[in-house]
Length: 148
Image (tube, rainbow, N blue to C red; front, top):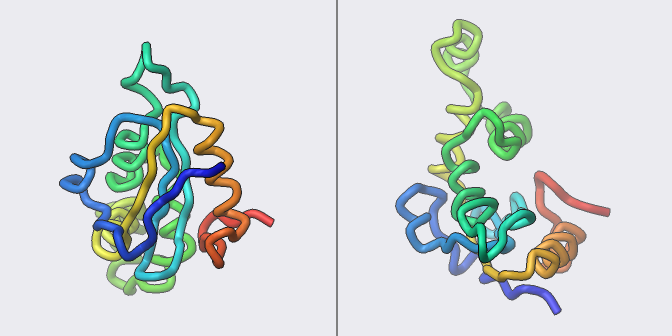
């Protein structure tokens, strides 16, 4: 048994306003660029019903969309997607310290990527779903975090 996560057809933009519909529960999520699967993630490893305010989907996705310094997703987006698209002026701005690469990645994420998700209170189920999808169970592996 695995979680059923809606396809890209049901995805919504990676912006703060769309987090209102994301529950504070564990789960698995997919991040899309049109029909291309970009990333698969999971949340909820330390979530419990007695301590529901940590390690949930809403928090995890919020970190991705905000481009927080501690989150690896925006860095992967920058390295694998944005770096090939930035201008000389943007490179100079990064070099001068007037903009950070995480901001360039954050802007790309908010403008070009969408997400879908499924929730559960069973972290192991979410983790199993993530692993299978990363191995290609949807007919493609994610660009940023595939598994063999």
